[in-house]
Length: 437
Image (tube, rainbow, N blue to C red; front, side, top):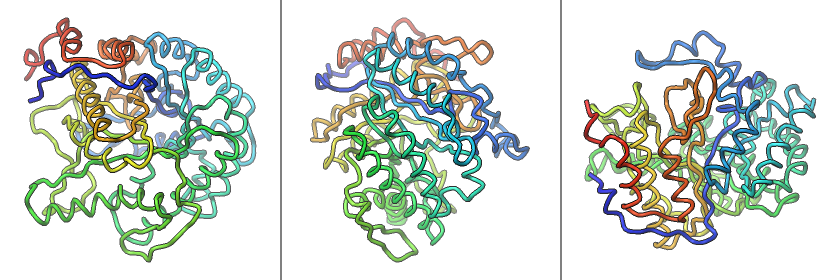
């Protein structure tokens, strides 16, 4: 059991960037021209995969498209100095070759308001969603379709570049296809590396801000630590979700199980920093079929009333992962937990920020931290998992900062924290032991 109250005083560098993160489809609402919106309307989507899974379409999400002015004021009031957001391609180009000037003006106004509040913006250009017409043409599954994404970036990037402090070309494409082998998965991952490189070089022609793609840094862990089969399968899972990505961007060599390696000089060095999304560890059991979803699950502890993958805090994984990325600056572009009890979020934040500081002491050049998420948002299949520092009423869309938001605001103000600060923010809440089932 972690003793968060005994944590020593921790300080971060003076220029450390503190902020929060969101994604367009998850907060904006009415993203009707996207492939995600179309999928949510299908009968199969609402049925779900298990009895305790509650599915719903995104609908108005957090109504951010209408309330973005209020949200900018909220971000500023909570002391955030950075904000990671995505721009929805499906709004900018709802029909093939047709640009929506009003959608562009909306995003420009949002970016300008953030800048006016001295909030540095990191923009993600593809966060899991794209126009339905692009999906119907085969999406990124057809390598030649890269030209449509390139045309979109050529339209958008020069129009917003003066307002952007950092870029993510794509979010978490390293996990697309899961930890599977074979030509089809390899082809998709090779294509996405080239899409990332295409985006990198195009952005660099318009912007001096750092460019990366947000990496879902899964910490694979053997279920039986000293079992040779579990350890070998763990190494395999790590390679196909993590190391293939790092190796390609460092060397230009595209290597994946089941296919011949390829070399692409455009991929080599196509990033200025590492962008890391980290949540927890995933267990690997070589005696179970498949790897995808073999995550550690407590049998009794449920942080939310459905199966999800964040029933554990494992801050040590953040240290171990970041030590692999000491060759470039690092931004934590997502880190957080979903829980109904906000006490967990305060503890989670304290432990992971402590781990982050230890990684920095070990030589990792971490420049900033974006908490996932600013708001309780739409989590791709439902609104049940709550990641937000700020609660959102599903009927009125009223925003209410949680105790964790106030704790984080003080962390930002102090540029660090101690166990005493954690205790002070938890003392006004029920103890962690009182409400256990």
